[in-house]
Image (cartoon, rainbow, N blue to C red; front, top):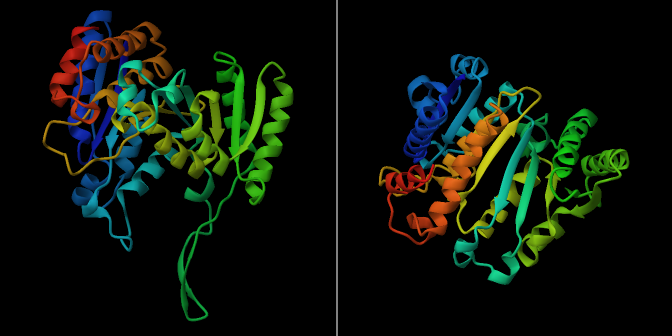
Amino acid sequence: MNFKITLLPGDGIGPEIIAEAVRVLDVIASKYKHSFDLQERLMGGCSIDKYGSSLTDETLADCVASDSVLLGAVGGPKWDDPKAKDRPERGLLALRKGLGVFANLRPIKVHPALMDRSPLKAEKLQGVDILVIRELTGGLYFGFPKGRDIKDGRERAVDTLEYYDYEIKRIMHLAFNLAKGRKKKVTSVDKANVLESSRLWRQIATQIGKENPDVELEHVLVDTASMKLITGPAWMDVVVTENMFGDILTDEASVLAGSMGMLPSASLGESTLGLFEPIHGSAPDIAGKGIANPVGTILSAALMLRHSFKLEAEAAAIEHAVETAITEGARSADIGGTLTTRQMTDEIIKRI
C-alpha cells in the first residue's frame, strides 16, 4: 500500500526526532511491503524565520492533501515575544483547525521497568493505563472575542471560552465508542460549578451517557481530577475533557510515565487524515546534542499507522519493539540512560 505523509519537523529537537521516526517507518515499509511517500515542510518558528508566517497557506494545503501529518515540535525562546504578531503556537492551532482534527488522543501507560523514573511511589502507578481525549478545536484557544485593548484608560486582555453543542457531542460520542473497547468507563472532566460552558458540557455528557448504558459515566471537576491524577491515577480509564483542561491535565499526567519523551498523541477528525506528534515540546536546551528521547515520536508514528492507515499489525510491531527495548534496558538520558537519540532508535529497530 502507498501512503503520502507530510513531515513537519518544526523547531528545537523536532528535526532530530522526526528523522528517527522516519528510520522506523522505512523499516516498516520494507518489512511489510508498503510505500511511504514523504514530503517535508516548515511550520512553527522556522517557518516564521523563512516566510514570516508560522503556517503558510501552501504548507497547510500540502498537509490537507496528504494521507497523514507527522509533527515534531514547535516553539522556543527565539519566538517567545508576547507582543509578536505571530508565534509558533498559532501555526499549530491553525493546523489543527485546517485539518479538522477535533479530538486529541493521549494514551498514558506506565511501563513497569520505568516506575522508578516517576516521582510517584510505585504502588500508585500499578495498573495505570489512561486514555485522555482532549477536545482540540474549541474553548479558550479558539473562542472570540479575543485580544488586547485599552478600556477606561487601562490595558485589558480578553479570551472567550466558547463551546457549541455539536463540538461537545462529537467528542463525547468518540469517548464512549473508545471506552467500549476498554474498561467501559468514561470520566468527563469539567468545571460545572463555575463555568456555563462546563454546564453545557455536563448536560450533553449526561445525555450521551444515557444513550450508552453499557458504559459507566462519572463527572469530575477539573481541580479534583488534577489531584486524583497524582494521588490515585489507576482509577481513570477514558478521560474526556475540553481543550485547556486537557492541555494541562495531560502534561501533568506525563510525569506518571517517567518522562514526557515517552508519550505520543493522535489528533483525529471525521476523516482518516490525522495529525500525530509527541506531547513534549521543542526542548531548545538540548537541541542538536543528539540526546532527545525519540520514543514519543516513534509511538506517534505507530498511532498514525493504526488510525490513519488502518495498519494494526504494523503499529503493534512498533509498540512491541519499544516495550521490549525498554524492558531489556534501553534508556535515553531522560529515563536514566546514556543512549543517544540514534542509539535508542537502533535498539527499537532491532526488535521490529
